[in-house]
Amino acid sequence: MRPERHEGYTLAEVLVVVAIIGIAAAVAIPLLSSQDPTKLGVAAKEVGNALRFAVNEARRTGSYILVDAKTTAGRLKVVRSDATGANLGAVNDPLTKRALDIDTAGSAFSGPVSMTARFMQGGTAYTQLLISPTTLPLLRAFNGPGANMGPLEPASGIVLALGASSVTVTINESTGFVAIP
Image 1 (tube, rainbow, N blue to C red):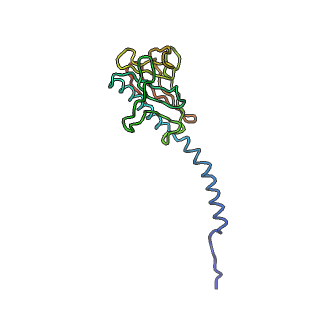
Image 2: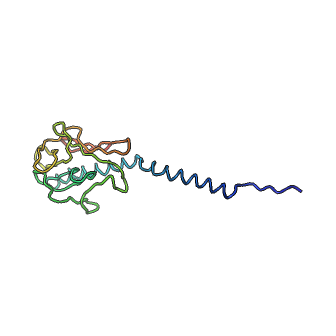
């Protein structure tokens, strides 16, 4: 009679392997998910859509619209304004019916993407953009109500960064056309 042979792994061996896989996953998953390139794309679409909406809202309503990336760091707000750039109240997002306020760092879809407004005027990057419904120039860059405003220059937009990657959502200085990379 032949001796019986039992093949397989002991419970201790299986537990050690599962523990090693668990530790590796706990370390790797947060690193991989925080650098997910789709988050940068989602943030670019959010910001691009907000800029497009702001330009169209100024034309549709015949009122000034302020795109504000200065008041709250890391956030982009769209508000009603006047020719001086004063904040006259929130513009509501047509889908959510809430104030249009983009937070790419805290968004469930795009976080933790950093955002830097670079509305260029006179070679200087400003953090606010005033959109006029009719008066030329239609797009003016500045840093607050009553501040020295000037026409938007080429290479203006919002820079979004995630880790070592970055993209710029640009806005054309004469047409208001928004380009999302």
